[in-house]
Image (tube, rainbow, N blue to C red; front, side, top):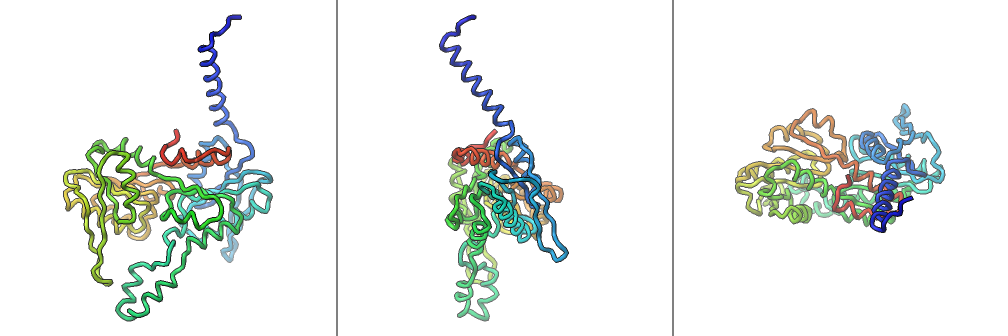
Length: 366
């Protein structure tokens, strides 16, 4: 039998270990169950396909009085359970369904229950600050009571955090929280993943003139997000500041930065009715931008959003699939989707194996 030299033997061992790791990654992971709620079954299926396991059996139905009923169809005793449910569609029903599923698994003796919530519900209600629309209605009649009314606004994101903890959740995995301080509303671990690595990958692969681009925030609150992306692309950034002279006047937008003869890329964490980003796109074109793209983590697109995007001057509006986008993409050809299921799948795998998830903060797993 020939004797291998030390370098050759070392290479053989490394190759064997890599092949063994690859086999283990794609084989069934022991003591793990992944269940899907009704809000985003496609994303849940993509996650389990990536992990190489089957989706857990669960039946959700509504009684005639519209109460939600959940039946877990297999044993979860001693298992590491992950429940995928996004804050989209019928948000209140989906949130209640998630709470019931967590509690059902917990009282069935699951060792750990992790809620995978790609788009966290009620994330915009994170402080005592009422919206401008309500202030406009009050300012003429009840100027003296406006401040008192604003102090009675709920912090609903904190309430949702309490509900998830009381239901029995041991861990939360989410993406691009509207305010990162929401993590502090929980007394359990929260992993807030970032879409930024996937966004950078999309920009480099799909915008040919990205080196001549400028990253723009549609409001001052997103400045930190755009500066991070601009630094990694080694391009400049700009922001749009919304000014309101009087409470009942339409907000004016002031562009801070030079976008002339450049590709403008608007970046934000979410878009709902799309009024802000559509006005921002008009402002950028007036300032001399050659093209305007919008990249958003959570594309909610409610109300007049689709018609506004169709009428706006965007080259493309790019969103992730933290919220189902199939219907939106049919109604609006400008909408494109980035798949982030591999990031959630890798977060689940690393959490299950007790590994760090910080790698995902700056890298896209392949």
